[in-house]
Image 1 (cartoon, rainbow, N blue to C red):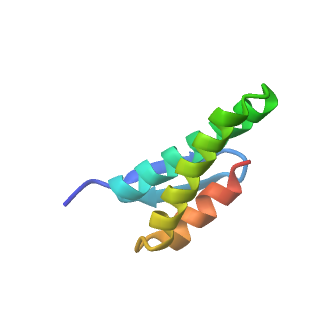
Image 2 (image 1 turned 30 degrees about the vertical axis):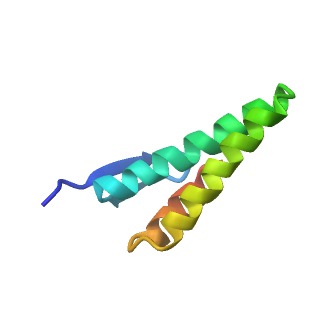
Length: 79
């Protein structure tokens, strides 16, 4: 069995435990959202569309994941 991955959210002083797969999903969702935002701010619309597309596809996958409730809570808690 894989060791859980623990994230600390200093904004809410909370800890979140995930499987390694769910942790990877969280990291990629936050990264893709950040990259899309930066691309938009720099008027790089093609890159923004690409990042947004991959974010959307990963969200579809994450939505079916057994840990979806924890994933959704974590990614919405960090802005």
